[in-house]
Amino acid sequence: MSMQNFTLPDVGEGLTEAEIVTWRVAPGDTVAVNDVICEIETAKSLVELPSPYAGVVGELLVAEGTTVEVGTPIITFTAPAASPSSGAAGPGAAGSGAASPAPAAEEGGGSVLVGYGTGGGATSRRKRPAVRPVRSSVGVIAKPPIRKLARDLGVDLTEVAPTGADGEVTRDDVVKHADQASVFRNIQTPEWGAVREEKVPAPHPTAPGLARGVSAVRSDQAAGDGRTESIPVKGVRKATSSAMVQSAYSAPHVTIWKEIDATRTMELVRRLKAAPEYADIRVSPLLIMARAVIWAARRTPMVNAAWVESEDGDEILVRHYVNLGIAAATPRGLLVPNIKDAQDLGMRDLARALNRLTLTAREGKTSPADQQGGTITITNIGVFGMDAGTPIINPGESGIVAMGTISQKPWVVDGEVRPRWVTTVAGSFDHRVIDGDGMSRFVADVASVLEEPALLVD
Image 1 (tube, helix red, strand yellow):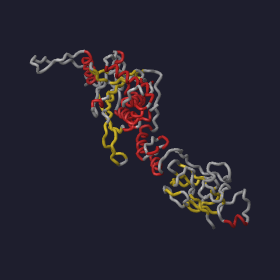
Image 2 (cartoon, one colour):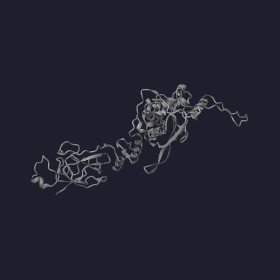
Image 3 (cartoon, one colour):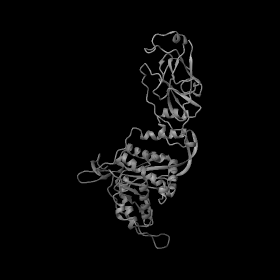
């Protein structure tokens, strides 16, 4: 019995090769025109390849996972099965022994895809087998090995930000996206609630060993011999010291940190600086950090809550808004003004708010109202060249995040050491309000955005 070869066609993308990803048929199967016989993957897309012949599958000539050139024989067909429309097999049908080509398969068209996506030609007389849905990645430029890696890791190539030449998705892009997706997968970000605040019973009473206050310690003044100097503690310094002592000795602090690759944050900052709509706005990595903290606080609300003591029993005040505090070093001392309802601001408006907050603080014009009502704080110790720290929580809050300096360091990417922009994110939390899993999830979320800021760009 004669055989009819079917060669890998040019699917119209101008490419010269493709990978046989999955066979949908096996030797002995009966197929009709337009039945899917396999999936092929080019550098641009994953395509279901239909059969241009009605017949019986003879042999699969190429193994799954093999990349072949256009025009290479990949499958053979034998005589078609009898069907009600064909009637009894006459001398012409029985004697040919070859599969019947679709009407669209004109001579000389051995390497041209026919019957794909069309409703014409012969139709199947059998029920097509159920096929698994195929994720469309048309328009994504990636080599077959990279597409296979994406499938193995469960990555949708249409959601990957390419960094290769001419917009090609690289192996590093896929691996990075897979790492980020592990944080975001199957987790829905809740909306900010209509109720701004609510109180919930505290899970446990204040630990008995924690002091509720600390008496002031006064040292003797030094002799007036010029070797020492006495500075009165007053104003901002007095308020800051009192607040920090109260926080340190009333809230059980726990600090965790994570070192991250912030290369893409630095790339985004450069693009924003060059964008016309940001021409009059100072943009820094702090903007991306602020966006990350706001988003992460929405996913882990307890870092944005507060421990409230009362005679009727301790409570936790859960706040469904973010008044984002920014620790600022000023000539007057440390101030922590906050941006009210920061969760409602887009990227540009948040950048403007940060600019106003910083300028006002440096000029010593921060009002008391701007320093009250904060819900969570960021301290940018990186501006002082520090890598990490263990910040003290601002009174009335349950979390503070420290952003370290961003500097180039050797970083292992896909088994190779490359220079990357690296920083450390540290967070201190009130352990009465939030437990270890919540702390870790929050810091991981912040880190994820700094590693892939495109996730939250509006």
